[in-house]
Image (cartoon, rainbow, N blue to C red; front, top):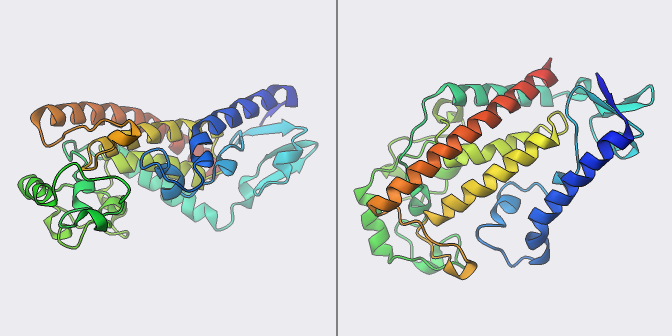
Length: 282
């Protein structure tokens, strides 16, 4: 086990906290007045900024004079150094094993492109403005036009946590009918939400994965969420977010190019997370 002196690890912890403070500043200062893009990760994933700003070295690194860490769950102090103790996992070991297997199966599956984020359209399919989830953001197209676009373009969502928000009228139109039980059977690396979820698996494995990895996953999730809402039927111009009109050929081309880039970056994070989980489980 590598031992880091306080002089080594404290600047890393401070830089990490400063980065998270910068990313979360708007969320903390809005006092409940939600931004449809920037606040999504904080509410949907429900991991508080105060928890994300805590720096964890991950498995295999022990810290000298780490009184803060010693008070956090799943840490142990032996011989004057403090470390994330995998022996304390208990029932979490099964969950971390499930995560590792899900990530591996996703990584091995061929990426599917061309969904065009139509899950966001399926979530408002057949609804009027006052009925939609993000009521503070106006729809940029009339409900009937949204229905026509969804009817003309097959729904190909493979991600249960997006599919479960489909309207009842839209759900039967999807090519697949994913469930929580079949999540590992359908998850594929081209999916925007599956790639955002890497951040979720990182924080759920805290402190057994490093904060460097969790921070990188959060940064990618922020970028993916932006594409997700840009391709949606909402008009977010009031928040300074231009729309990507995926109902046009040009919009489809740009969407797929960005989707492919995110897939490549997400797969690198998957490999890193699997390696850290393997170390923790070993």
